[in-house]
Image (cartoon, rainbow, N blue to C red; front, side, top):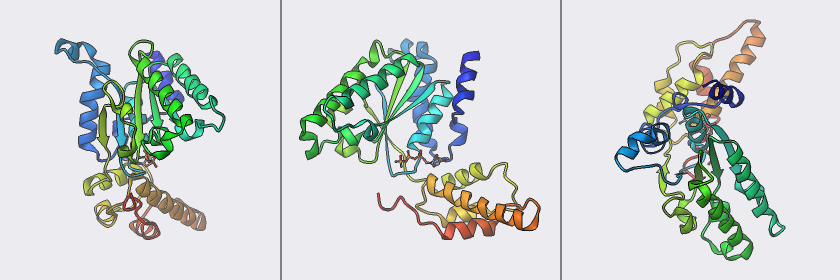
Length: 267
Ligand code: ATP
């Protein structure tokens, strides 16, 4: 327990309480992923066990990374973020080596959630994939993932992509990224909850979050976070002008909301 606490302090990971909306997703992830990790004996009694990793997809800014971090927070594990494009190298062989080292590092840091972002950057089943270079990198990734069952004990892999339909089918086979989960843009209730979480504890005055939620259809969680950040900047500016702490107002939220365009529509 002591050790778990240290991991939390070190990484300040989120938990499910920090996620607004996504009720169905949270329920599914809890049942299919978190509980089998926390209570494997219950699942074993029914002949079930955790197999393979989750694959998140959906428009940008709708919580793929955030949810992966929160899962790590829930199970008190380290969170390791692998940004695939960043390990791609023009030198043949170097990217595979980078990938291998990343997995080796993860194996030393168990329990850990290994989050692989932009999977389609290497696992995209497109023409570019025909290049020998990309093929060998995907093969290396498959090899590392298949190790998950034996020497990858305590390493929980979650992948993310905005375009799952481009993924190399080999990555979707059982035991790999077999559980596909869609993270949609937040609905009305979800937006209200996200706004409420992001304004919680800040000086504020009669915020009508229902109203802001209504006006922000198609906004992602990230878009809403920006609205709140900009509104807070307005309140801070007023605080400096007047020389005293000023509450965040509805007007601040409306002003900053009008400056933002929703980003989930282009997806
Ligand atoms: P990308 O595809 O661009 O990588 P993503 O889906 O991984 O996007 P995140 O990085 O998870 O998006 O989200 C960006 C930020 O938006 C998060 O740091 C978080 O603060 C906020 N956010 C997104 N969705 C939610 C949510 N459901 N509840 C609370 N905050 C959210």
